Image (tube, rainbow, N blue to C red; front, top):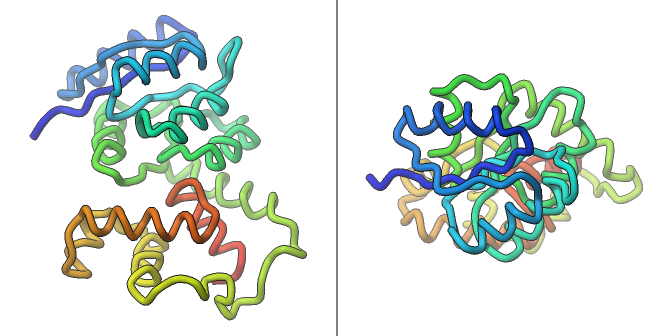
Length: 216
């Protein structure tokens, strides 16, 4: 299996060095670094890493804006490194399309596993971040926009897309969905993209949060 490639985006050199050591010790290839959001976008465009490991608070262009452009241009998947006092930024990163969230206290094995998961098209959420992220999304959706629990908001989903959405809500990876539904991973990815588009979500975690908020 080819080792995932990663771009490190953080304004602290010591943190980038530590992340590089942790990742390379676990077989992850670090192809570049960035000190702010602008450099992260430029380097992601030039290097096309599998994953951008993105800090949210950086001088100049922040990680949320950079994440949005990287995701919209299809340059890479983004795995965010965050901390407990950044609920507003976590919500912004969800909307920007981040594929996962980790705390900066993450250990090396968990970090490497998360990078591999995101590179494989899956998500990665630290349990301590997940609850706060879901709560932040729920609080951001006005009650007047929340449909009744009859899944009327999901009426446009096909039967297969509903199965995919149910799997997303269960936390299944693309590989698990493919195995359970007896379809290819490539087909799963296509269905996931369709589901996200119909729900108006930028990521799997965002989709799950929206559906749970709407009473699905």
